[in-house]
Length: 299
Image 1 (tube, rainbow, N blue to C red):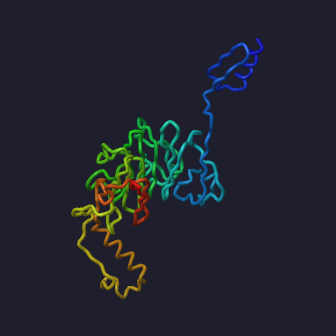
Image 2 (cartoon, rainbow, N blue to C red):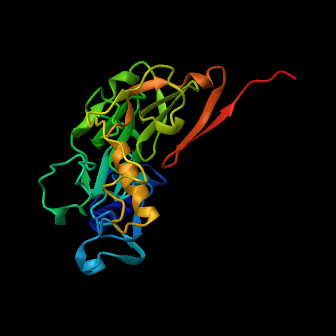
Image 3 (cartoon, rainbow, N blue to C red):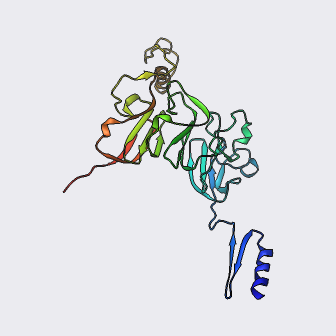
């Protein structure tokens, strides 16, 4: 009777009790609360909503100078990823949450939603039946890896970073990268215009903007982007001579013109130069790539 009274009091104090069992010398209480709770905190520039904080917390400028709790997320977040202007978080059930800039569809939600809704964390649409194990936020692209090693991407990139096929430069909802079917991907990384993927068995695949060797030597002629242009620019171009532009501005203009005839790999391809070695980690900079390799040696 004493145990029963104690259990009833516990039930009154904690309405989350879902099962109670008692034996002669002890009582066991099971609740539906997780055994741990996580909190995501953000700080810095919130002008694009990447902090996930309401204006009532940050003020008109949107900045936060102290780590501040991101409201609207579940208490079982297991990993996070920060892009240039948006953020991603995975919960323990494999659900993916996103907030921040959505101008390029990187949140996987309605692009016509009002801008003041960008800082509201919401589940990424189109992944309801996908168990997300890892997520990666870039500048204009988001990606997720599911429990089968498939890669899902969404966002907008004229440089082919989606890897969905020739000429596909945007998708609002997540789409699986079919060119990676049959490979179990464990990590992806995004640069300014290129992307890399690492497989479980140590292979490396690359796609996107391929200038300057950032995804290796693909071994065949490159396809240009749909923004093809034969226009060329030089530092002595008459359009800019005498305009008062300094050298830095001219270099920016030159780069913009070169982008109109970009060499692009539209789907993931094997980086053949690394055959025979095991890829252990990858990282993309803006214009370069890093790969950690391991080669078996007999001593």
